[in-house]
Image (cartoon, rainbow, N blue to C red; front, side, top):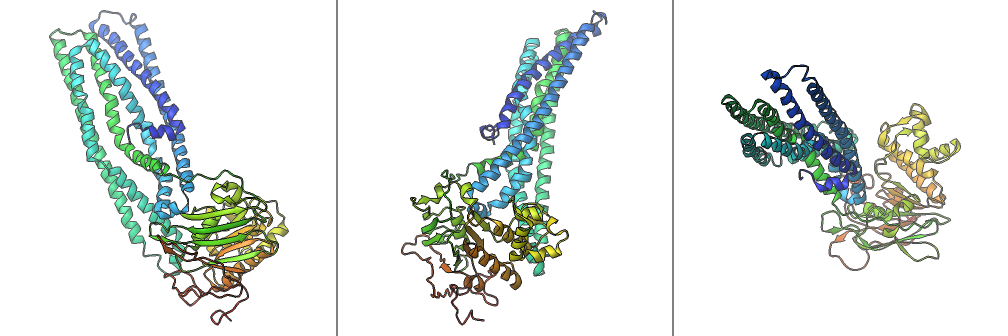
Length: 611
């Protein structure tokens, strides 16, 4: 990043006023530094030579005290407003990074950038504070105080000014050499920290599964190795910072010493007056001080500079523009996918490929549509396309209200669309608060409504075991509840929604982490959604969910250059489609097998699925 990157001013409004204020304070500091040196010399010279009484020096001493007080106040104001601006700048960048990462969509986050963004938005951007509080003010002071004091020295003693002018370029020269030596150190440290954060996040997310299989002790060696790498990178950065600081301190000290020796020799030989000599001796360290401080705080700010670079890299990613057309009422509308294909990450595979699907929302009888197919075929991606979270690489998604022209889902305002949809991902994320408030979600519901939804979702069994019942406190993300209990809480919350206002329910493998008893709860909830007149789209692996569906849609992948007829079609009532492809290891399928269950519409049976 440049010493003052224009992107920082563009993205952080707080940084703009701060830079202007810092520049103004820098000019004030330059004037006060010069005034302090001149007034101090005018006080000391007569006192040393005995040419003035102490009473005559009283006004000058008072003026000197006022200058010192003003300089102290300027430094205090600089520190105070720097801390405030740094806090606001980091908050603005953090909000923009998180908001933009969400706008880039789940596909971008799933590419491995999610943990990186999480680390960047927390610890990474916090490191920007030294840059704002220490480095940037000194940089502006170097641009104001150094030339101002050098100009005053030139007026007092041209020999000292020449010595300073010759030695000053050595400071940035050594800074450049040190900068090249340390190039990439902070970036490598941030990468190590992000890798450590990503692995710890993955470990925490999969800890219940690791505990269940007795593998919780294995990953600790990898986490310890990454922590050791982070420690080595940090200590390497500090080592170079200390050594480079020593080099700059030695250089500036020797430069001031050369000026002092020259002034002293001319004083001895009578070639210079005492008052200008004292002024030059006071001003000489002030000329080098901002540059010394820039070098001192440069390494303290490099972590923040590296984090800002990554923040700008995220913000420079082009995000799809959200739609602006208000969504029509979904009840009675049709949501259709026409030839939809989505590229699966960086693989040369479309998942799904050429998918056609039509959903009639909010019919009086309700409808359950199961999405099934081989592992990696794009079932979850299809659900995200229906929700507007992922835009297809090929094909269209249209929303057609009664007596209205089809509307591209990409043109629809997502906030007006999402408030009419209930979505239950594989791992529901719950807001913190009382269990009653988490389930109600701000809706005006009675205790009878809560109890009815709890019975249908199987949450009543959870309430009987949780201390406090409905008044039990739930942590952020559902901390305090198991995965199955969170699933029941989310199901109960979805059941409370008004079916007329929320006619579409999307469930992503709701039985993936549940036992047989929990699976039955989900099936009861799915039937309850259908009885309410809602359209339920469920990503299904288990045969029980497929049996509960009115329509089954087989989703299949295809090569990236695939062309031809649609491969995802709804199964007609009474038709049975055998998939015949094995799932990947670890993918939940029919109990006791490693394959996806056959696609069976509601009411149909096969030898494999018959009790």
